[in-house]
Image (cartoon, rainbow, N blue to C red; front, side, top):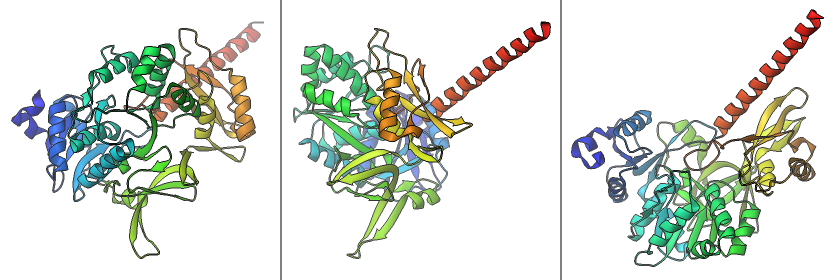
Length: 438
């Protein structure tokens, strides 16, 4: 591929004000792995690009701020951002290695990773880092169906992996992928056996519902719930407990994280870096650097529970309502695992919540009644949190990492409401016309 052509490689090697950086198309896996290996050993920093074309790589370099890279940068990730502007996050080799080693320690030892997530995002590229650190070859899942995720084809890819020298096989998935695997395993005993044979199934990027956890437990799947983000070099809390030397605290309801896997900061944005990464001196006189996640959560018995985003709160009739809590309850019901809570203006209440869900399974699978879900939400969260309506969408807009694209959903809702308004206005005009004719 063009990526291994020295001339093309030169074109794709951008320069910030003082430091070079390689933009590597993720389609050229050999080059990406080689460049990551070099970066982890102190070589040129890498920027993975989500398209196997030179044009995409050049575009990514142009979007990178013209600023000096933080000293020690090995990897730059352009975050997708579900509701905000993408940011360029700089990660050091030591942070990436610390994350990889802590993951293997928690899972029971090194293993071979089956890669089914985009490798321009931290969730995908970290599987490559883990592979490099422990000396195993990753297995890449290329879905032959052309659909977003085919669980049967994915299990075939897992079967083809031998686990390398350790014999252990690991996967990292987002909840929508894991849900498809559970559905297949519940219908097909052989598929269930194959899923159980995987030594570790990390699921992160979004909350794993209690119902999903129950189903996984019933099947005997080795599920590990992962919590983390680009700024922590990936998952750093598994099943509510810190891995490696990660530390967790809650301040003013916000989850804050510390440890060796924290990012160096945001390239070209010292103000945001200072706002999100804060240093405090402890009672022992030792300074600790904390990352402010923006997530709401609580620590009970040393176990972290993330309850949603602090910025996903609406005010309805003077009452604060968490959209993430509404989603959590809705997703516990059959057929509502894709539900997304949204806010819409309301003349009386100021704002009201609604639910968007993917169109029901064409096979006719059951979906819990909306009124029943609304009643449960009202009982648990109060009247202000009860969604006024629900609507179906053909396919939920999603970011490359699998999270719902909140901006795209809000835009779709806006167009839908505008269409309804036009229809009502046309109907009103027609009625007036008929009255005039009479």
